[in-house]
Image 1 (tube, rainbow, N blue to C red):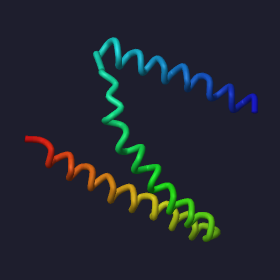
Image 2 (cartoon, rainbow, N blue to C red):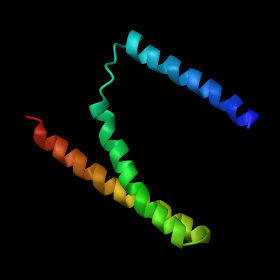
Image 3 (cartoon, one colour):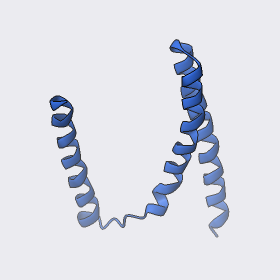
Length: 89
């Protein structure tokens, strides 16, 4: 547990420093509306992947689970990308 916390802490500090650099140096505005669609897509794609992983064992279950996640995530991302193109003038 100590090693996990010891590794986690530098990653948290590094993330904070990267965020500060993006925000102050590059004047990045953190628009959560830009990151929400991939997070929602990943959350939805996680459900069939978890079901596949639960009911299928071994390496075949891992491969099918990963394939299910990527397929569902890819379809949702393609749909989002197509919808976003329609909104632009």
